[in-house]
Structures are given as C-alpha cells and as structure tokens.
Length: 212
Image (cartoon, rainbow, N blue to C red; front, side, top):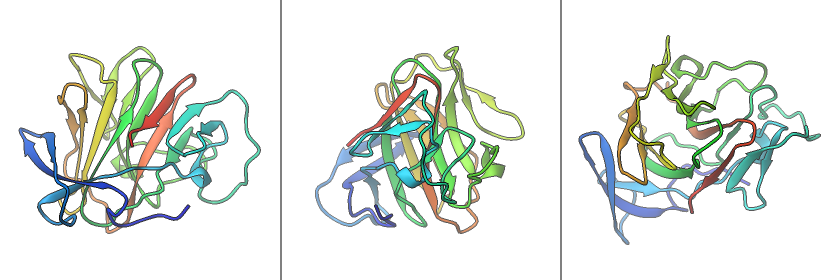
C-alpha cells in the first residue's frame, strides 16, 4: 500500500483548540486548509511491523502474538522493539486520528520521523524522533519526553486516544476521546523538515485498533 501526504482519504473537520484540548465539529466541504484539520483513516504499514505483531486483514488493528513470524528482513521493518508505523506520512498540515487502546495491556501511540531507527534498540523520545504517550502494565501512564519520562496522573484511564498533529507549529497533542480530557502536549517538536508517520508500540497481550 502506498503512502499519502494529503488528507484525501479522511473526513474534513473544522477544529478548535480550547485550553489545549481538541474539540471538533463536522464540516462536509472545503480543503484541508489553515482553518481545517483532517481526520484520517489511518492504516498500518505491514512492511514496518515487528515480526511478533499481527495485523488485521484491513490493516486497521494490531495485536501482539507469541509466535515470531518469518517476514522479509526489509530495511523498513522494526526488528527488536514491537513497533509498527502508519502508512500515512505528513510534511505539512494539521491531522487527527483516534486509536482504541482498551483498558489493559501495555502500549504507546504517537508520531515518528521517517528516519526513526528500525534496527536494534530505539530511543522512544523526541531525540530518537518519537513523540508519544505510553501505558505500562501497572496502569501507569507516561509521556515519552527526554531526558526523563513525564508521569501522567490521569483521573481516568482513556479507552480511546486522540492524536493531533500540527506539522508547521511542531505540535503533538494527545487527548482522551471518551472524556475529551487533555492527556499531554509536547513542547514544540522539531521534525527537521522530515515526513512523520503515526507510530505504535504494542506490548504482550495487547491490541490496538484504529478508528475509521
């Protein structure tokens, strides 16, 4: 499946940021211009998936599998950390997608530069080209900041996470779709002119699903 740099596959929404949290309302016309954010129908890129990750046929969900799959050792594939990228990539504009994360397991969701390390250990932080939030097995949440992680004392566990990217502003924001509560906003990100992709890490016994 090819990648895309535009919002052509998404639904156009007009958005407003109120106090850092994202709120949207439907709009059926117009382009993804300065006043619009595009809600994307993100799909997972099987060429990047770690061999223990199982993608659904429609490439909309990913789960951790016990068996190591015999997959091509292509340069795009994560070979050590259980990660997968979205097919979509962005070098401009404002974009928004939602991930069903459930209420258990371990996972991380966010965005990654196209040059993110795929082989061996990775640095899951902005210096490593990743901006993400993570859930640990014990039900604790962190933002993958650097040099140290930032604990996130959430009032309730989000079951669906919204990821909002404003490329020009270097803004990556996470909120809980079920409560519209702000989870975390990263300090201004430096994408160094690179394209960025949706990024996912999936722990043992965990499944993530992308909203259509």
